Amino acid sequence: MTVTTPVPRRPRALPALALAAVVALSGCASPDGADPEGASEGPAADLLPAAEGTTEYPLTLTTWAGETVLEERPERVAVIGFSPNLDALEAIGATPVYALSDEDWEWRDPEWLSGVEVVDTATRRDPLNFEGIAASAPDLIVAANFVFDENDYERLSDIAPVLDNPEQVEGDQIDWRETQRMVGEALDLGAAAEEAIDGAEEAVGAVAAEHPEFAGRTITIAYDYAETGMDYYTVTGGTAEGIVGQLGFEPNPLAEEFVADPGVSEERLGLLDADLLVVFYNNDADRRAREEGELFRTLAPVAEDRYVSVLSDEEGSGGNATWVLRRGASALSVPWAVEVVAGWAEEVDLA
Picture (cartoon, rainbow, N blue to C red):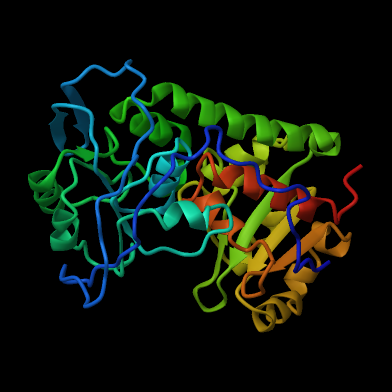
């Protein structure tokens, strides 16, 4: 069974709190930190909602690389790293002064993003643009789950206090709620952070309530990268398993086989078994190649029409849900992703 155009069945909800009004011009910085000719920047008003008065400053930020101290409430926040870091600010109505250019995620509000003073032309795959970050004059750098080198951490902390995880963890094991809470506490917006978390979980619960047929069923989600092989996404204890679990799916006992190594070799194809199998492909040619394989065709969910394929290269396919299920989970992205996952499951009779 092929699904290429799933769309959310209801409009994406706005963040729990209304976004703060932003008066700013969007600019960009070159990778070496110099501003391109004609780029316009200016001080942005109302970057943060009013303080809640619950965070006490000075606030010690404990990270895997040491401690930094916020002497007072930040006013200018730089964000680097993966999309959940930027999502965590948008979810509580806070606007950073610096952010990396990033993919055009469906759950992000373009109008809000336009309020960022500097959207750097660097990406999360490029070396850190220390000069560009420093030029934005931040008093806090949000870098959760992104900096793994002590020298990089020290260079960032020379610019401003760094918000990062207390311990380094694997990407699939990140709890987006903790990132949201860390950002909320640092900005004295802890209640707003909890409201964003609650709103996201309520949205997931609403989708689960619409689909009682998910309860007690198992789901396997994998990505066929063709030349580099297939990866098992819904590993035991990972982000993807947690998200589909909130939808009512039971943990798949076979998922434990992929904790140490998510790779799905030909010899391990039988471990893809589940009540529902969802496989992502980069393109139709890769999908055809996989589906023509005899071992794959004899898998129970494939042979019994409980298999859904998703083409990530097709607009509207919902392919970006793979990012949410791996490293992109946030208060904004999870409600969008569960709508997409539910849309795929609706194509299969799980009753």
